[in-house]
Length: 417
Image (cartoon, rainbow, N blue to C red; front, top):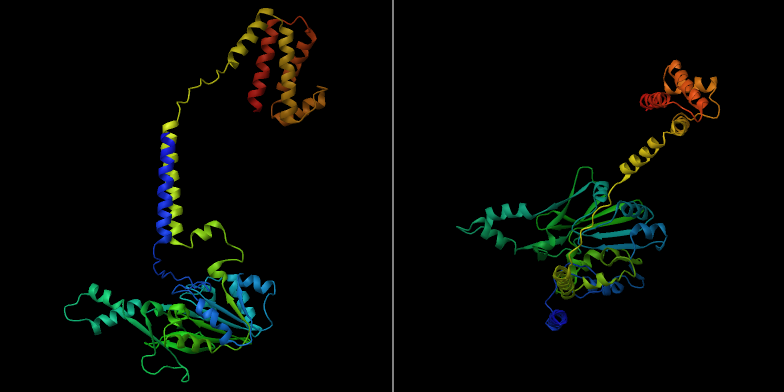
C-alpha cells in the first residue's frame, strides 16, 4: 500500500512539472543553433526562405550529409555553390580535401563561422584572431571614466558594439558601417606573408579582415568570420539585413547546396533522445525522471534486500583420497603393481616431454633420450636396467627394488623439468 502511494505521489509530481513547463510562456531562446527550420533569433530560417529570391531560378538543396560523402557519391550539380553557416566550421580533414577538389573544378564555397578547421587554415596560411583583450586594453586607456576600475569598465565595455563594413565601394556603408553587438564580430582572419590569392572583401572597425576571397583553381572560396549576421536576429532588423544580402551578392547565380548536416545531422536522425534535447522543458523532465527512478531503486533495494546465507566452501579431500589409496596398496603389499604403474607413468612422461616412442626401449631409444634429456648415458642405462629388472620379477618384486626404482624415477623427473 505504501509502495503504491509513493509511486502515485512521484508520478503526480512529474506530471505537474511537465504541465507547468509546457503551458508556461516560452522565454526567448538565444541559443545559436543556425538551423534553417527554426524561428529562434540565432537560427537561419529567414535567410533560407529568402534564398530563392537571391538566386532566382536556381534549385536550393538542404544537404544532410558530410561533404566528403557528397563528393564521393557524386551528388553534386556540375557547377554549384556550397553554403555553410555555423557557430564553428567542423569539417573533417577528408571533407576539407574534398572541398579543395570541388573548388578546383570551378565551383564556389562560402564558409561563415567563428572558427575553421586547422587543415583549412594551414592550407590557406591563415590564423584566427580575436579583439577581446586587444580592444579592452586599448579602450580602457582611451575611454575609461575617472576613478573607474578595470572590472567596472570591463562590464560596460562588454556591452559595446563592433562595426563591420564591406570594401567594395558599391556595397560599403558610409560612416561607421554596419554596427553589430561585439560578441557577433569579435573574431577576424589573420593573413601571413605566405597567404596567396586573397582578396579582402570585408573589415571591422579596426581594419582587421573578416571577409576574404580566394581563387583556387577554377573555383572561388569565400571565408567569413561573423556567422551571426546571417541569422534571423539581424536579417529581420532594418538596416542590418543589408550586410548579409550584400555579402551574399558576391556569389554567382548557381544551384545552392545549403549545409544542414552540421546542425541537424543525417537525414532521418530523429531519435527520441534527439527530440527530448531540443526543448529545455523536456530535457529537465527527462533528467528529473531519471533522478526519481534512481532514488526509487536505491531506497527500495535497501528496504527489500534479504540476508544472503553464508555457504561453506567445498572441502578439498584430495589429500585424504591419496592417503587412503596409499594405505590400501601398503596393506596389500603388491609391489609389482605399484612398480608397473610408476613405469607406465614414466613412459607417458617421456612421450609427452621429449616426443619419443616408448614401444621399444632399445639402443636408438637410449641415444635419443640421452640427447634430449641432457643426462649422462650411464644414468639412462642404469634407469632402464632397473626398469628391466622390475619387469622381469613380474609378480614377486622385493620391496628394496621398488624403493630403488622409485628413487631413480624421481631423480629423473627432477633433473629433466
